[in-house]
Amino acid sequence: MSVSTFATQSATTTPGALAAHYASLPSGVAALRDVVQGLMIHVFWAQAYGLALSPERQEEVQLRWVERQLERIFELDQRPLSEARPIERKLVGNCRDYSTLLASFLRHQGVPARARCGFGAYFEPGKFEDHWVCEYWNAEQRSWVLVDAQLDVLQREKLGIGFDPLDVPRNAFIVGGDAWRMCREGRADPEAFGIFDMKGLWFVRGDFIRDVAALNKVETLPWDGWGLVDARDDELTPEDLALLDRLATLTAGQVPEYAAVRALYANDDRLRVPRAVNSYVDNEVRVIELAS
Image (cartoon, rainbow, N blue to C red; front, side):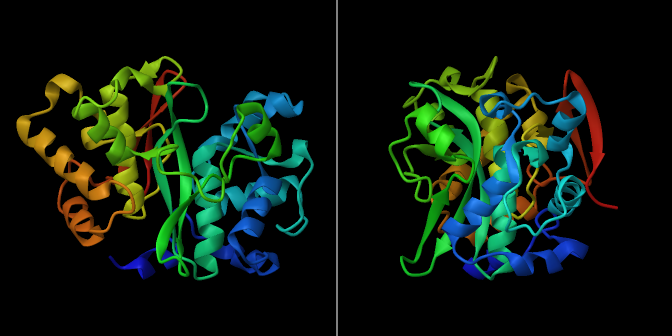
């Protein structure tokens, strides 16, 4: 596995023309996690902090690219990134955005990092909720470590979090491939995986393939669809299922066989994110161009 692959920015995580603003950032995963929390508020948690979001503010979760998020951050407050914003001047994001922004900061400092899509077991007892975290390479441990940058003091208290969000246990956050294997092998009920009224093996498959894309440094939005993400269960062929089962084994845990994952993704239209994706937002489908 080429760890260094994840020490450089993707098209999603690059700060682009705003890279100079990263000079004010502290070093270290914990300090950078704190910066992310000082810049962003989760769209579903805003009311817990006493903030009512307008529909216009909620649309900030569609910004997708870190460079555009940074532009909005500075529109709201022009101070250095290292200075925490008041609640009402924080960027509205979600778990994916916390993860990609932390990955962007870490990659800028040469630390291999990547977003992981899967399911958190710590939001509701007995359930696995749609979620993203950041994963970084701990050189001293020679291991990938999961970080939930979203879990600040308030959320940890309300959720009763008993682990360190800077080192999330692998049985607390289930990466997409592991979730697929658990369901396919009968070790877990697919109906326990999802969010709101969306659940089941089809939902697990979507997060699984989004995780594969993120492992290939294409960090989509949680509601993006394409290829095997968009396929109905009754449309899947035995060949599709065999591919998914193999890929689930390869992407479980820390992904020791990254080259094989990369080859499968790069050479299969069922997996590879196309130039345009279907983005499912508020009961409508938006076709979003990702590349020219």
